[in-house]
Length: 153
Image (cartoon, rainbow, N blue to C red; front, top):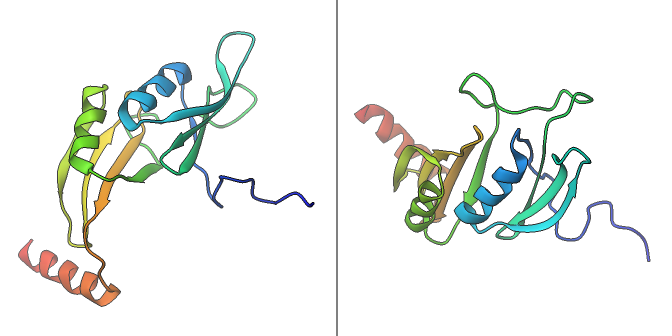
């Protein structure tokens, strides 16, 4: 039996977050998104060296930033990465994430591309897009709706 180049349960792309307070982030992700901690390696100083979580059917990795890497946390109120998560009930999941300590960016609302989505920032600076897919649309339908939205302003 040969080893698979992509491990069982992983997709081609897995988000990896640098989080200053990684242990607290893990607890937040459990409360906010129902994350399951699959694996965790703590460093001798107590920081999280590496952790693997599962949110729904998708993995996410995170760890405490260290001096040996350029990998870090979001700074200056901005982030270059957003995490998009499809959920069964965006309104309920959004409320749960806010109750767990997330900061609202935009309340859930129906979008022109067929999703209902809302956006929040977690206590560690990462932006999360939560969505429930409501309509299957063609690319042409999405473009038509987008154009109508832009005309309305």
